[in-house]
Amino acid sequence: MNNVYKPIDAEILEVIDETPTIKTFVLKPKENIGFATGQFMEVTVPGLGEAPFTPSSSPNVKDKLDFTIMSVGKVTEKLHGMTKGQIVGVRGPMGKGYPIDGWKGKEILIVGGGVGAAPLRSLFLALTERLDDFKKIVYCYGARTPADIVYKDQILDKWQKINPSKIEIRTTVDEGDASWKGNVGVVTTVVKNLGIDVKNSVGVVCGPPIMMKFGTFALVEQGYPDSAIHLSMEKNMSCGIGKCGHCMLGEYMVCHDGPVMTYDKVKDKPAIWD
Amino acid sequence: MQTHFITDSDLVTFFASLEKRGPMYMAVRDEKGTVGIKPYSEVGSYSYPGVRAFQPLKPFFFSALEEVAEYPSAEESLKEVRPFTIVGAAGCDLRAIEALDRVFLEGDFKDPFYEEKRSKALIIGFDCTDPLETCFCVLVGVEPYAEKGFDLSLAKVEGGYVIEVGSDKGKQVMDDNKGLFKPATENHLSQRKAMRDKTKDMVEKQSKEYKPPTTWQDLMSKVYEDNTWARNVETCVECGACLFTCPTCQCFLLYDQKAGDRFKRLKMWDSCAYKNFTRVAGGANPREGLIDRFRHRYYHKLDYFPKTYGFEGCTGCGRCIVACPGEIDMRKVLKEAGKS
Figure 1 (tube, rainbow over the protein chains, first blue to last red):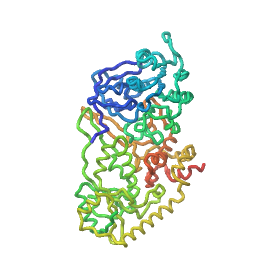
Figure 2 (cartoon, rainbow over the protein chains, first blue to last red):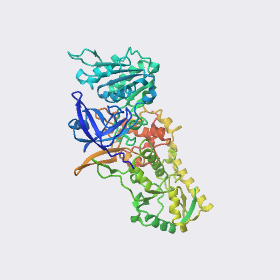
Figure 3 (cartoon, chains in turn orange, blue):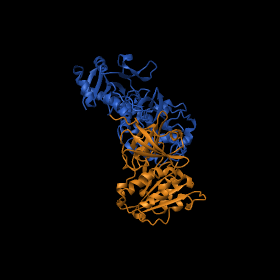
Figure 4 (tube, rainbow over the protein chains, first blue to last red):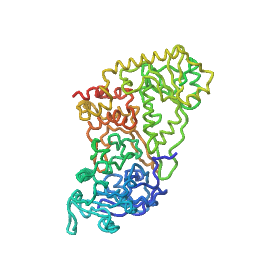
């Protein structure tokens, strides 16, 4: 019998500073644990407990996992103090990820903000590694300031170059600085004039609660049907296996029925944006 | 299903044989009239309990506190459990076990600790004869007798008991004690039916005023913004007694702590009535208000659970009513819903 509560030991191979509050941890689990993009895992800080994160690496990389994590609570704060060579735990993968097999031939709009860039990086890599399957990818990403942009070298440079005719990266910041030449404004200010055929498109939204809400509304305004808008719901996912009740959203256990859920499924549930 | 008859004295012989399988627990009435679960070794005889025990049966399968993992890579916490027997599961208790089975044994992952204990249990149900004034099983599709979900069930009749087989496991333990059982007669079965009808009638009479206009789900679809939640939550002290005593409440917390030079992960009952139950590290809390949390319990039992599993997550056992220090009565809260 498999004990789903037991974490697998994982060594920290590398810690990358992304922003003043966000770091990427490259982990090597003792056993290879695959995942589908958008699925999540519980990361254990030994003795302190677990918190849920979606890997930010490509699902095609099997022996290592990247987790991009903001320091906001006690588990993440402790994790930020950990260094190369230390051991953490990993449990998963859990839940339902992005249904990218159903997106063949489609134009894909991704709207992200802040540390919501983490699952979106995994998604973006998964999509671009089989780019022939998709018609186009437009990725709109917003951060508070230029310093808060996660994956700067990728979002501001490398990703656009993968295929300039099929990929369009739009970046924006709430407040610019002297060096910032790009758009200033919340992410919804760049979710327009998309050059996308909405009828043949799916949308993805991931970010902090307020951005999720207005990002979703922006997609609705652009004509996306509710069933084509994929949200990464952030709830208190504790057991990760649909039992413990903490992440309940209406009749759904977000850890089991999500975390990626289409807007039509959740729009009428209580407190979806809180 | 097969029905047999066993005399009072043969039943005690049968229980003595079952006790050899492993630990045995029994619902018995104490001198004050309260029915509670006790180890059979402390009871030693059998008297018909008449109604469900004051405790739920869930701790037999879903412990209030248990170790579920030790790490880094250490000995496996998941251990084999000895077979055990529970004598005295009422209709509501059996429904509760069915509910927990669906929660813990279905979905992408099973809970291996629940599964191990559940697979080792022999469950003997019984028909209620003395419902409490807080019983309302008939309002949530549960019979006040052992309808299904048992390995064996007992019903008191003249001179002994009708014993019914509900599973292969139940049949096996009867086959192991063959000489003790006779076929049940028409007379035995009509006695059992008369008793069932009488008990059901009692529960129906006392529950009548609380019956929803159509179905619970239909009622719940109309009363989310009703004043009944705000009005009835006033005496709630957020103790969680209603939830811990609920036979179907499934919520738990995973909690890690140091144990020597390693770490242990504990799984313990949790309560959706507590303020930080749904809080995330970033600070967002979808059910920060007490009214939201109070209402959630009703919606989980009567709307969300049926949407997922097809039947109510409330068994009508009434334990939450008895346990509440604020005298909140689920039946009354729901009766007022839609009327304000």
